[in-house]
Image (cartoon, rainbow, N blue to C red; front, side, top):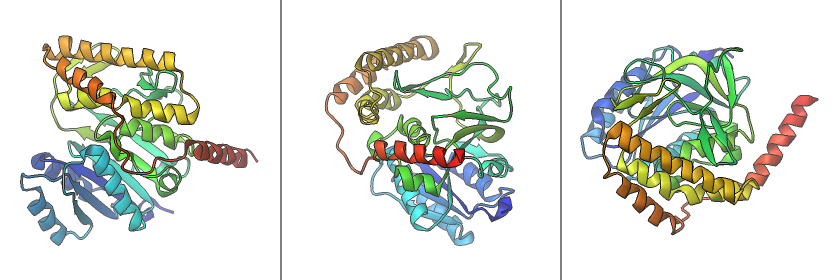
Length: 326
């Protein structure tokens, strides 16, 4: 199978960022390895997104427009988009937000790895052209992504990991069949990290030495030498804390929850956000969003969809590993 024969559908989630979306769609439709379809999931934008995408779809039938009745966040958007692309029969799904742009060979550089992993991430450049720092491991003990320092590709072009990011994740249909849709309850943040962790139970999750995307939205940033720290919104801070009970429930059902270490992880997250506010953003008002998120976390978010069976996925991964061994 040559790269151009692989059936890949991009799934893009957008909300009121039409200028950025235009850049992204232009780059996706010009990929060296053509996409079979581009699903644009519109979280009830009010900035002309619908008119633009419908007109683009009339010129290029690969563009499929899905407008949601209200803003469901990135989590709800990816859930709806993957469901739609899956129902259409596509074999691979390339997931991304609306504030990135794909390099012309972005997809082509990922396709050679589809034979060895079911969840693939390429590298990204930040808005300033520098490599984007990704916390490339998920530590179930602390229930949070943690950084891996140094050159991840010193031993080769593939770094195996267990975490995901919906800013360029390429995921196989069989993986979605096994772990289900992205969990819409998160609204934003944690959804991609946990989805990559779930995927690692049924397939290899890899990070490859190929630049696929660049972030287009400028952010304030602090260079810490070994890594950098960007600014964040109050919406992000609120959901970062509000969603911790969902993460705890995933850890509990997977049989890896340690209440003490989970609490340590939560404390580390709060300290990191405090550092971000004081040092990077130089403001204190964001502490209110953290407080509101903590209060909201005391009430379990309403379940709006099935959560995958972690035990079933662990058995599937064990069976898959046994089969490969023979």
